[in-house]
Image (cartoon, rainbow, N blue to C red; front, side):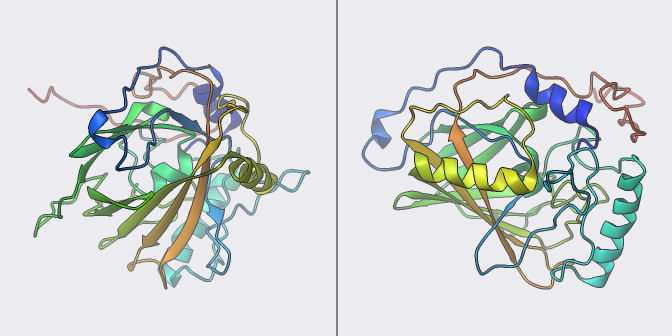
Length: 299
């Protein structure tokens, strides 16, 4: 999770590199929604849903009133947090105030766990096939594999990205994820809100009207702040993409949290990035935790 403008912007403002071409399979043309193409946004964090608890917001604001992307000071008084979660968010907020980052998947160059991946990633692409969906994310070249029309195993060994299965409900893709690894860097968002054991994440993707997507993004940018033009939208594309995420985090939340993320089709090709190769975190100006290094080869 970048906590300084340099680290946040360099990864997204360099422009994309070569894009792969996805040919929509004939088997699916009339059966499932087509989510292919490059989708993007220009703001971190989650959008609030009407009549639902608010996600964790940034207490540090810019003169415009929007969130300060260089200082992720989480609101530890959010009523959805259990006391132990509030204490963790407060401790991390105090570090952020003085420019010290804390371990999370981004600062550690680790796999991005759901739901952190939705709060942080600005660019994504679906690769849809008959039996599986692969989701590519731009920052740090993250990849998720989702099985279609399958069930979770009776025992799911915890992993950072968990076990994800999916199905279509009419025009909506539903992804269900369990078995997410819970450790000190497993977080819900860039404020370090902890994700504990027994977490359950459900994603619901559907295409929406482009004008509605544009309005939702522009409205949320007043709250979350705009990070730059790396995800320049295609103003001629007629559809947007809405993601509704429900997060069950029984170890740290008093109740499930439902949030939104709105994407628009982007006109820019894919960007090649590195993370662990920059082992000294040269993008960051503030103090940052060291990136793990192997003592010996794995094989």
